[in-house]
Length: 291
Ligand code: C5P
Image (cartoon, rainbow, N blue to C red):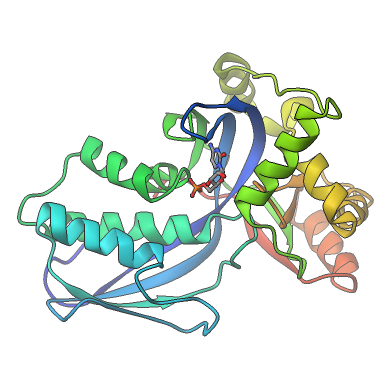
């Protein structure tokens, strides 16, 4: 990466192969177990160092003030590690509120981009700490690829890469705010309508990943699906439509609303995409490797 002049970085989206919500913690967050997977869909950020700090975005619905995680990430790098101020342009392609981690990925891309420009460069642990302050998913996006995660999502173990798997992403208009998805699950568990989540364990995940996670799809479940589907039944219908096209695996991603399906081959994926496009905005993507 150039250390003078303008430069750009890509911020990839993620899906969750699996998401188990294990229980509420004293700090209000939930203990979770997940397998993150970065995918080819990405935002693009352009940095113009040594200009006053500002953010512009080609999507007018995205706030560009201090509430944006990119601005918060840049401020943290400037204040704590002596990064230069910079003008930032964000080309947004990852839909917000879709469970694809777009805002978190943009924030991690900002941390990665500014890190080499700092007068007091942060260590990897420093960066991970700042990342977690910005959001539970942000530490994953510092490295991307395929990773098993516990805690809030910050205790990460890289798994064998699952890159190159053809995907279909269904992007319904419905949007799910993450805190609400957790609240819906909590209520149903407290009422005894849904069971508490059980961990799968690193060993089984790492073993399956050695060949392909698609060989052990019974463990690839998402605990947030049931409560979110109860509130937004159309998402359950879309998952059924996707399943009817014969993917190797299909689930809601993260807290939704994106529904993702993985296919054994591109031709099968393309045929599914064509069928589903009448019903909902559907796009093709592939799983990606570490950045
Ligand atoms: O950390 P992040 O900003 O992504 O979290 C958004 C919200 O999702 C939290 O405020 C919390 O309600 C919920 N959450 C949780 N446990 C996690 C991650 C997120 O309860 N491990």
